[in-house]
Length: 586
Image 1 (tube, rainbow, N blue to C red):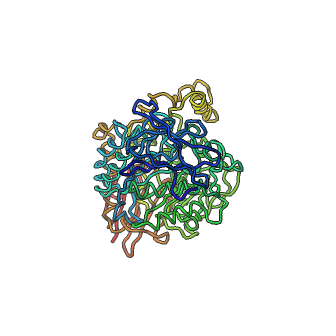
Image 2: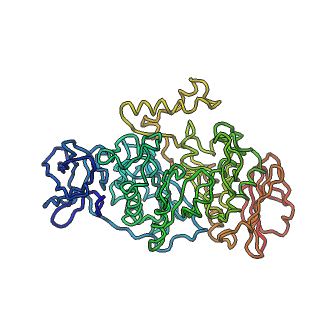
Image 3: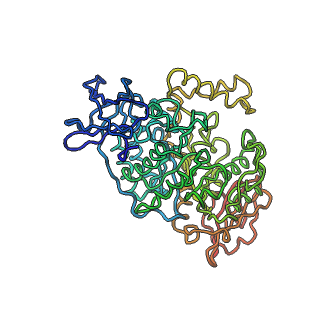
């Protein structure tokens, strides 16, 4: 690989084009006008080490180009912007820079709001999201997390099939629009987390292999084809420099690395360790979140993650409230005792056989292995847990508002890092469905595969039932998933919103709930269908009681305690069914 990454680098006199290929004998750059008509083609000069480079005078920022490999016109996989989509010409874009938030939240005060740019606002753009930031910051969130924005196929999608990692997705806006969103978040004190996908490339529009098959290894095959080869410099450098690009040029404060359990790297120094070291060495230091399903403390201790997603908590809350047993939910016991154990150990599975893994043992205790509660990210909804449901239904679509508010209080009371999925804070009525915009045979494969995915679920065993699953390729599926902001002030949404506002204020201002809590100062206990959780700081304590059953509960020792918040009726020491109360003793 050349010292300078491939791509287009404008200056006052023109633009330098850099390409690298292990297979092409010649590489040219072809310039286009705004209507896609070719203007001229210029050869790049071979410079050794398979590098091709040339400075073209007069070619300025904003020019459109493709590369031509041995006569084959090919998009630049290192493009900084692809205004006409992943198969079209790239636009020459000057480097930018956004400073990171100078004082990011302390480790115990991250409260993450996860959003999908395309469905978060009516506009579905970076600028549209920027207009809604006040609603997030004023409520008390301290960070937003953007689902992936690296260019992916079509006019809509979740973003997890990106192929041009340096090009912000054009339907959301241009690179400067994304920088504007980050700056606006920072002005409001919000950190920005960016979701990045490095364990695979999407099935359409991945042109890296045309430049160098060495980017991938056939030794490991994924559902998307050969896996990225992190043991060799081309792919390893692409990924590490891409992380640097988002952190430096866009001022992102943290990365959320998707599916780290699916990385295959035999190197002595794992590429994930290189990523976390890079982030931590920056000034100010940046954070790295891992999505990892192994319940393995070493991803924090050895690979350097600051926070790891811990979905067991979500699954325990879900089965307890809904009784659902399909898919991986069958591995979880729908009891308050199982939920209490998950809170005390960090995860449910800490070495026990896990049926979805064919009975193989899964995980180790976060508590016993030296992690802190804040190293674990908990949620009661996220884009996966909602969007991977057949009908994209949210938890609030399956339980009553009392139970939903009680679960929300539990999430925000715990010392783990909480994540809230967009619209959760008011129990949004809109679903979040799986949607995409592929073409040709791939479009039909996605359409049929989506419905076949649920044939083993009891509710969709009948083909007629599966026919009700929305077509992921239809634009209407995407439009249905957009948040309806005007419903927030109507009941029951307003009640839910008030619950989130109150609990976020407690988490921000209360001397116990705003501080880091060690495992020694955290205790969860089950009493039938009642959960009690205690957090301590010195001689002060905060006690949460949640009733998951249909009977009110008399709380022992409530006399003399201050009531900080109650999601339901609490009188004379008796708590209403499906309610939560936070009590204080100082």
